[in-house]
Image 1 (cartoon, helix red, strand yellow):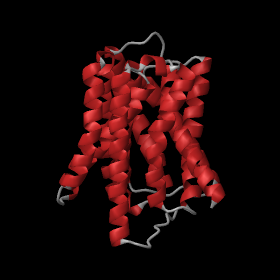
Image 2 (cartoon, rainbow, N blue to C red; image 1 turned 60 degrees about the vertical axis):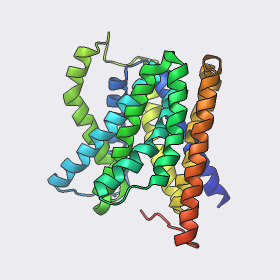
Image 3 (tube, rainbow, N blue to C red; image 1 turned 60 degrees about the horizontal axis):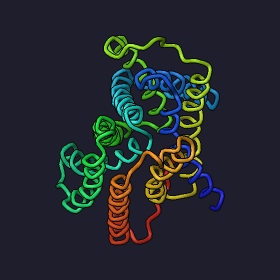
Image 4 (cartoon, one colour; image 1 turned 120 degrees about the horizontal axis):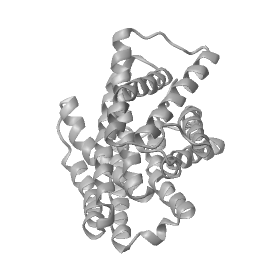
Length: 301
C-alpha cells in the first residue's frame, strides 16, 4: 500500500509536468499536440503488441473512438495555447472550471437532474477565475483559451465514459491517440496557414522534450495509473488528482520563476479555487459515506 501511494503521487507529479513541458517546448500548440499524439500512438501500439493486448475493434467503433481522440486533441491545443499565451499557473488554474462545465454538460448529455450544489461549489472556482481575469489584464487571452480548454476537457471525460463501455482503457487510449493524430493531420495545414511557423520540424531540444512528454507523461503515466488502481480505489485516486494543479504551479515557480509574475489577485483567486475543490471533495465524500459507507471500487484492466 505504501508503494502504491508513492506511485500515485509520482503519477500526479508527472501529470502536473505536462504543463511545464508545454512551456519548455518552443513549437506552437498545434504542432506540439500533433507530435505528442503521433509519438504516443506509436508507443502505445508497440507496448500493446509486445504485451499481446492489442484488440481488434470494428470500423464503426474505431470512428467513434477516433472522434473522441480529436476532442482530446482540441482540449490539449487550447490548454497549451493558454500556457503559451500566459503561463503554466494560469493554464492549470483555468482547468478548475471543468467542474462547472461537467455539472452542466453531464446532466444534459445523460439526461438527469442538474445538481444545484455542484453548480454553486463550481461557481466559487469561477469567481476565482473572474478575480484573476478582472485585475490582471495581461493574461486575458490565456484565461479565455484555458476556459475553452476546460469545457472541451469536460466534454471529453463525459463522452469518453459513454464510448468506453465495451473496451479496455489501453485499447481506447491507443485509438484515441491515433484518431487525434489523424484528425489533426487533416486540420494542421489550415491551422498553420493562419498561424504560420518558421519550421514544422522540432529542434533537438524540442524533440527530447516531446519524446519525454509522449513517453513519460502519456504512456508512463498510464502504466503507473494501472499499477496504482490495482491497489488503491478509483475514488481515492480521483480525489488525489485534485493536487495536480498545485504540483504544476510549484513546478512552474521553481523552473520558470513564475512567482514574480503573479500578483495578489492571482493568489486570491487561487484561494477561492482551492476552496471550491475542498467543498466539492467534501460533497463527494459525504455522498460516498451516505450511499456506500464501505465501498472501495477497484479498477480492473
